[in-house]
Amino acid sequence: MKLLVTGGAGYIGSVVSAQLVEAGHEVVVLDDLSTGHEDAVAEGARLVSGTLRERAPEVLAEGGFDAVLHFAAKSLVGESVEKPGLYWDKNLGESLALLEAMRVAGVEKIVFSSTAATYGEPESTPILETDPTRPTNPYGASKLAIDTSLAEYARLHGIGGVSLRYFNVAGAAGPQGERHAVETHLIPNVLKVALGERESVSVFGEDYPTPDGTCLRDYIHVVDLGVAHLLALDACEPGSHQIFNLGSGHGYSVREVIEVCRQVTGHPIPVVTGPRRAGDPAVLVASSEKIKSQLGWKPERDLRAMVGDAWTFVQGR
Ligand code: UDP
Image 1: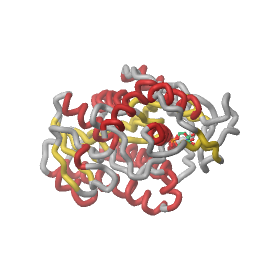
Image 2: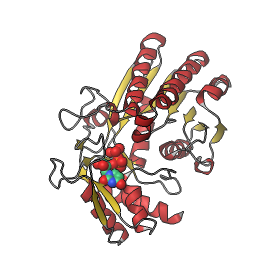
Image 3: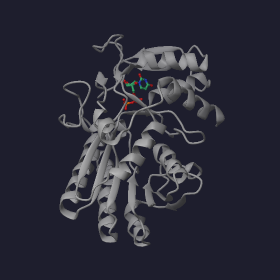
């Protein structure tokens, strides 16, 4: 297939692009390189640099595209609270420009990077796709609005859309991994300590109603996540919008993650306990039964593999 990958210079987009090229697809990456890196673009993919608004219409007008995989987004929760307008404009606004460009060019399939942040504070665990969506920050709200837009474009214009709601993505795929200018995520921050770039890692709150008092999150290896995108691509059905959670169904505490990092790196990883981070729910664990039963996906790489691959990646840089 000929595929447009938006955000293909970013962490997840670059890993999935490499898997798509490997599977024999023709990949065009569209990325404004605001947070992505030109040298992360998968070998064999063609890079067009620019925003979706500026370049998606002309790129899709080239013709022959079978589908779009849409990763391009602003994705920092804290920043979204400070600059909601930026998140609505870049996430929802640019996605609408992309959907319009698809409609005009007659491209009918899209796989979209949605997020667990669309659910907000869960009422029950594990979270099902049918659970209420009450995002607690503009990042989650803007992603939920895109999910809704996909449903409308499916109903009114016949596109086939799949939204994949990622939980906590981690790990690396050889030369492709996580390298954000502003790093907020737990595993990369712990590995900075092991690399000697930071003295200690902060644990944001130890007074949660969980077994060791720290938050539980559902981690998924970026390679397993990529496999789900290839399955989702085949599952796009004209006129329908489908939503699937992507996680392992198992929650690890912040303390457990740090312990695995100690085992993998052999570094003692000093910890400083700090206050809770605003907006962090105590437990976020996905039910991934739907994607398992309907698309035959299953996660194959555990937390140790995620930390091990991320550790190999950061050491190589
Ligand atoms: N966390 C932490 N210290 C850090 C970064 C994260 O204690 O330096 C905690 C955070 O409060 C959350 C968990 O680790 O409970 C996962 O956070 P992350 O930012 O990686 O992902 P999120 O779940 O927010 O998407």
